[in-house]
Length: 267
Image (cartoon, rainbow, N blue to C red):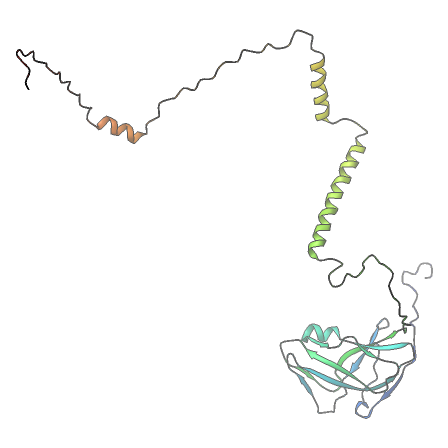
């Protein structure tokens, strides 16, 4: 970047020569091109006949020809990927994304499309149906061994690196750690000064120690507690009923008279 220039210098893109053969049904269509200077892929056209169309119903799939055959350099591959615009607007995507075109393949490049949308989608000649990205690859040298080296993850498979619940748990742990750190910083920032509760406790203990002897409070003798049963309170309705009801009758006392009878007792 030159002094005073706010825009970076134009970067030079890495270019690799790929030989392309345009087949008979693809002639007349423009070769795939990068739409911008920083684009990673080129758009592939549908090489249909002039009056031919392919109708993709919802859930249907079709193998669409491109009319292109490639000679990819050794150590590279061509990846076939969906176009974001078709996926967003119509639900059209590449079924086996990313599809791989090997460097030793010399046949026609065809794209396997599927309709995940709710409406039919019509493909005509020249429609840009997918994008192709050239990527560098390396071949693995597989070595048969008895055991493998240990790792932090081990044999953990699907979902072993975490779920939403574990993420929430980790957030809670982080909050608790943050509170602990804040309390430590607060204590350190006070410069070792004692807080108000600690000062109050110390003053109370000091007053207890400085009291002269013989000033202890005398304990009152323990008094026995008696429970006094209070009469139950009558409700308003019960009071009215008691005032309107007739007074209770007095019981007559009957005195038994014993007669002093003379003569022999009756048999």
